[in-house]
Length: 321
Image (tube, rainbow, N blue to C red; front, side, top):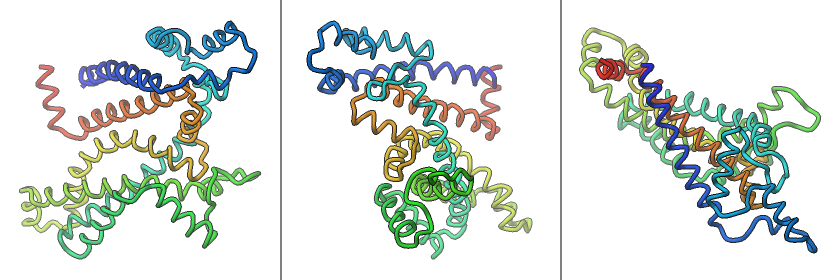
């Protein structure tokens, strides 16, 4: 198991390097010069060059990339051109808000999709299954920004029971106030993942219910509820472990829209500001953060999958032997 973890971890390094190269090339291939937004009339060429060196955009693209990597290795992602603050400091400042939103959305997705998927699989092709399937297709298809606006109109403007945006009410610092602000953005961010997870769990449930071990359990008089919770559920959750790892990056990207609509002070909103202001160092910092989340999510999913599935453990044992 240890060798498997080390091998999978070492495979992450070339992926990070390739992503950084392609991201750097794409960002710097955009037309225009971000430094021109900060050049004042009357500045000399020496002053402009000093600004370029300060923000790491002097020289050709190879020189810029090598210099950027050198700083990253030392834990320095550069200085934001737009905000004139270290990128690492900006990301660390906004990270807690994004983690709260992402974690809550993921928790909602799992708590809702698992019972719905099991129920739909158990009631295959019946009215219950058809309703859940329709809701799943709707959740996969509906745009997040449209759903966000509809929920704001209903719950914030019409019923006035939830705030329309922000993370806290001014001069109010309570957990209850935070939860009220968290409800709408977390529900919208979780909607698509809930639908996808439900479809996967439904499909797995249907296939598991046709397995021999289920038929044997039924013949012995085991209740349907016990079969679902003790046997089928465990096997249905295996593909969800992988899906969760893959969808972590989707949550980060989804926060672009959600944090902007709900004025949530997280990394997604910070990244939108960086794109609008052509802030190369901050864009690269966010890109690498998203990539790291995705890679670590998949790495963790592989480890959890190996722990949960005895067949993978046996395969690793044979390879080590």
